[in-house]
Image (cartoon, rainbow, N blue to C red):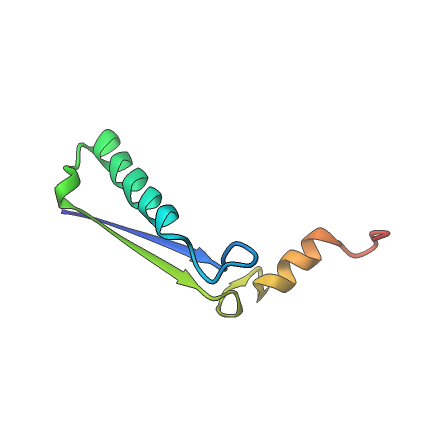
Length: 79
């Protein structure tokens, strides 16, 4: 038995979550990857997709949105 956990921070702008089609593609693609690389049967591979609200995600010691803002406009930039 194989378990795959896909954790995604935030969503596409204007969307509350991934679409059903996007989730289906993630499930199919990640399951097929384990089948192709590790020989795991599709019917014994489980996939969990967890969508974490951006406010609950940190990166580099900062809230994710602040980290991204600083990365786009580093100190001393003319932006």
